[in-house]
Image (cartoon, rainbow over all chains, first blue to last red; front, side, top):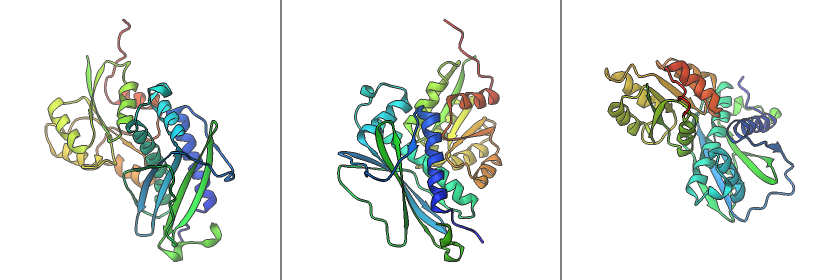
Length: 170
Length: 128
């Protein structure tokens, strides 16, 4: 029987994927953080990729503050923070980081027998909004800290093959 | 000999990282933002090496690769595929597409150079 990766697995997987991206491409370190206090954003950049397959569907969201998005962009592009102008570069970098995170999760799901395709990333930028998961989705929130900045990776998955899903594992 | 490297990726950031990684090498980097543009650039520029992303809008990397392989003038061009997906099935699939190599994102610049040097005779620029 195929088993859906447990929430713990997904948290560890996201942490490993983030650490890989941050260390290899940004030369920044990232650590898991407690959910509380929940990060407050005056301006937020959210990268999103969708996953769709016969047995699993869902989304991966990377929520970062505007300032962290700029720091990540500066690190990835190897420029000073003040050289990051406008939104285009920032959106492209956050998209790419989200794409790498989603790609890692997709790979893990496919290896576990849950074949799916991944969308190209999209960006949401706003100051105050909430993403509500559909009731059938199983949202998981993974909090991290990079320097002084706390951020969130939200994974919403629905395993369509209920026989394959072992609730004891999550 | 100055080589031509074609970087096909919808992410400007990745194209910039590729260009920067190859800066110390005797090559010119040509950029394309999707498979359609990449195919046109490959026909026009006859690059020595193509670095090809898989997931792109308009035309994805696998489709572009298929079209390269159908064209007698382009099918011998060495291709290194870049992918964010490291799953066994994906890696196995892209390995069978007649490519030179593949590189999983995220990657370090040194990993990209190592694979590019293995694929084509890329030389470091002579010190000024």
